[in-house]
View 1: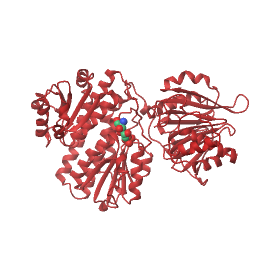
View 2: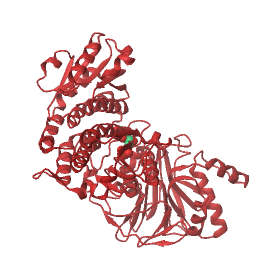
View 3: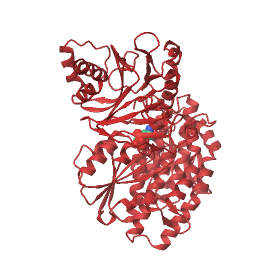
View 4: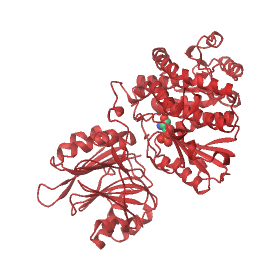
Amino acid sequence: MCGVIGYVGSKPCARLIFDGLKRLEYRGYDSAGIAVLDTENGPAKIELVKAEGKLIHLEPHLGELPQKATMGMGHTRWATHGAPTARNAHPHLHGDLVIIHNGIIENYRELKEQLMKSGVEFKSDTDTEVVLHQLHAELDRTKDLKAAIMATVKHLRGAYALGIIYAREPGQMYVVKQGSPVVLGAGDGENFFGSDALALLPHTNRAVFLMDGEFARLTADKIEVWDFSGQPLRREPAVLNWSAASADKQGYKHYMLKEIHEQPAVMSSMMSRLLDLKANGFVEKETGLDALDLGRIKNVAIVACGTAHYAGQIGRYMIEEFTRLPANVELASEFRYRNPCIDSSTLVIAVSQSGETADTLACVKHAAAQGCQVMSICNVRFSSIPRASQAVLYMEAGPEVGVASTKAFTAMVLSFYIVALAMGVKRGKVDPGRLEKSFDAMRRLPALVDRAVNAAGVIEEIAHKIYEAQNMLFIGRGPSFPVATEGALKLKEVSYIHAEGYAGGELKHGPIALVDRHMPVVSIAPRDSTYEKMISNIEEVRARQGRIIGVGDIGDERFQSICEHYIPCPQVGDDHLQAILSVIPLQLLAYYAADMRGTDVDQPRNLAKSVTVE
Ligand code: M6R
C-alpha cells in the first residue's frame, strides 16, 4: 500500500528519492515525506520534510533539505492507522533515529500502552510510531542498531517493510522485511531499496529480494543480509528484464489508456513465449505446469482479489470446460478465514498482477501448509506470491502503473486459457479438433484485440452520453458475467459512478427494480450458447425503459436493433476467449467516462495499486 524508497551513495539524493517516490505513488497518495542525513554541517543530523496529500505538495519543500546529502529515504502513504495528515506522514523521527514503514503493526495498541507507561510521548496516531520508540528503547539498551533491530522485531506482530537511519551510524541504513514487500537495488558505488523494482529501474536492474524474517544493512559499497536471529545470508542480485521506459506514459494522457493500448502486444508476446504456435503445443517450463504433479489433482481452487478474482471466474469456466475437473473460485480474503475443503489433491491457483496482495499471499501460504499444490499466475517477477508458489506462470505484461487493472486482466484470462487447455490435453480431455480450434482462435486474437482497442472513437462518443449517470448496471451470462462485473468495477473505481455487474438471468430476482428510463444497462451478449437467453433478459430491461448499451458481435443486427447504443466487437470464434474482446470496450468506456468527469484516472481516491495489508 505505502511506497518506500531509500538511497545511499555519492549523489545528492533528495531529488533522486522524490523521483523514486513518483514511481511509487500509485501505491498510496495520502501523504508523503523524505528524510536525509546531513553530514555537512557538524555532527550528522537527520533533516526531513513532509506534506499531506499527493507528492506534488511535497515538491516545494525539497529545497528545505540539505542539497548535498547523499543518503536518505522517502515514503508515500496509504493511511491505515491515523488520518491522512502531515502529522501522521512518514518518516517518523525521534532523536537521531528515523524510520519509514509499509504494513500494519497489529499489536500496536498494547506496545503503545507499555511505551506510554514508560514515559514515551507519541507525536502521531500511526501504528508505525510504536516501532520507532521500541527501537529507540532497544538502542538505548544495546547501543548497537543491528542488535536493537533484532530485539525490536521480537515485539512486533503484523506486516512491515521498514527503512531505518540512525544519525550516529552515518553511511549506512537498514531495511527490515516481514510480510510487506521490499526490494534492494544493487548499484555501482550506490545501493537502494524500494517497495518494488519499478522505483529502482532508472538506476539499476540488479535486485536483491529479501525474504520475510530478514533484514539488510546497505552502505554505498555493500549489501549485507541477515535473518532475524542474526545469521548472515548470501544473496546474489537477480537481473530484472523490465526497462525504465516501459514504466513511462509514452505520450498517452494516462497510464490507464496506455495500458489498454498495450493489450495487443501483450497477447502476442505471451503467446510466443508460452506456446509453440506452429505445433499447437505448450512451452511447459514457461506455463509452470512442469513443476506440478498433474496426476494428483482432483479439484482446483482459484483465489484472488478484485479484477484478478473476476479473471479467475472466467478461468474457472475454462478449467471445467477443458479439464473436466471441479473448480471453484473465491475471494482470497474469504477463503483464508473459513475452513475450505482442500488437501493434497487440490491445485490452488493464486492470481495476482502485483504478486504482493496480502490476502492472496495468505491463501498461498495456507494452501501450501495444507499440502496443496500451489500455482500462481502473476505479472511481477520475483514478487512474494510466485516465490511462495510451487509453480508459476509469469504473464510478463510489463509494468502496470494505472491503479485500475486493464492489461493484467486480459493477460490473466489468456493465461487461464493456456493453462486449462494444456492441462486438458495432458488429461486426455481435449480432442485434436478442439485443440486445433483453440489454437486457431489464439492465433487470431492479437489482431482482433488491436481492432477492439482501436475502436476507441465509438466508445468515447457513448461515454459522452452516459458520463453524468449516477448509477449503471452491467449484465452478461457465461464468461460475459465476470466481464460484466469487471466492467462495473472498472467504471466505479475510476469514474466514481455507482455500478454493479450481474448475471443476466439474475436481474429479475431483484436488481431489475432499479431499472427505469435513467438507468444505462451495459449488456454483453456475444452470439454464444447463452445468447438467446441474454436477448430475453435485455428485452426485460427494455420493457422497463432501461437504456441498453449493447456489446455484441459485429453485424448482429438483431441485437443492435434493441439497443440505444451498440458497440460491435470482433469475434474470435471461441466463447471463452471472446471475454477478452468484450472487456476492452468496457475498459475504454470507464476510462473516457472518468476523464470526462475529471477524476484522477490513474490514482483514484482511496485506492492503492498494491494492497499489501489484509
Ligand atoms: O495485484 P493484484 O492483482 O493481486 O490486485 C488485486 C486487486 O487489488 C486489483 O485487481 C484491484 O481490484 C484493481 N484496482 C482493479 O482494477
